Amino acid sequence: MGTSVAGALEGRIDTGTWPLAVGDVLAILAFVAVGIVNHDGLEFLLANPVELLLVGAPFLIGWVVVAPPIGAYSPGAGESAKAAVPLAIRSWVPAAVIGLALRASPIFPGGFAVAFAVISLVAGAVLLGVWRWLFFRVF
Image 1 (cartoon, one colour):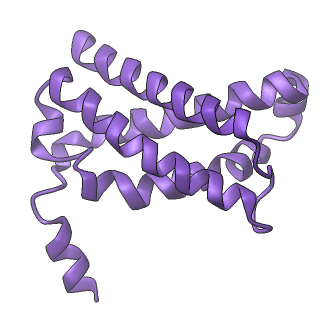
Image 2 (tube, rainbow, N blue to C red):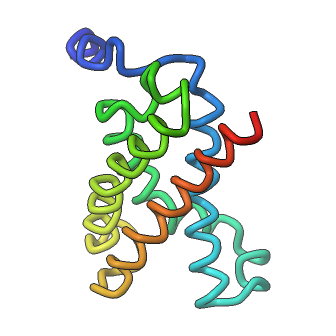
């Protein structure tokens, strides 16, 4: 099975895109942190930092499952914002759907609400897009 996964991802991951990957994870965690702060306050988040990982885990799992095969870390993604931003947004939509489905399960906290689904899709796409655009503007 490991060989088939490696074969499927061959040419889809460029090690030179690791800064994008780090920034993507931080952008997703920033989205989650803003949500926690809006609902429970900064004091709660500071007192319960593990909550960030618990609430963020479903979205990070979705991202890890979806982003590499879609090409979010392909050689083209590392060349320009013009390539990187659309790949992030195309990856985020199914990743967020996976994250929302996991939140709706009894495994993760959070549940499901249509308003949160819409906010997740839009806010996550914007954050990832802005992060990647800024990356290419700065570096």
